[in-house]
Image 1 (cartoon, rainbow, N blue to C red):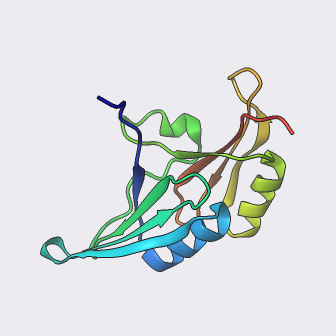
Image 2 (image 1 turned 90 degrees about the horizontal axis):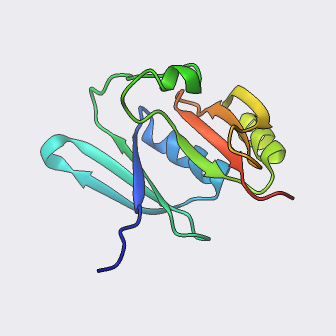
Amino acid sequence: MPEPRLDHAGLAVHDLEAAAEWYCAAFGYVRELDLRVDAIDLDIVMLLHPGHGDRLELLHRPGSVVGLRPAGPAEAALSEAYGHIAFDVPDLDRAFARVVELGARAVMAPQPSPEQGVRMAFVADPEGNLVELMQRRQP
């Protein structure tokens, strides 16, 4: 039997269209499909990265409320829930500057990661969700 692989991560957002536009601009996703689940009044936008095939599912349901919005990775680790999503980028400094320019809030400037040979940074997307940028490959 083949090994399982992660297909997508789901992120509930307040403004579905704005979030889709931001993740497409910031990380190169394209809109793959839009879905509606009438039974629970749920709208879904599935984003696909054309280069490596990973997906990010954005969900919105009217009446949703803001959940945990940790100020940084240390605070996120105090909650037993999903704390952030992470993107491996080829140039951490450039990617950090670009997503901040696109509206992310800087949380942790680029710096060495605890993992040997890796650099990392954190931002909060325009809705406040934590996003880790990491550079495993050295330029």
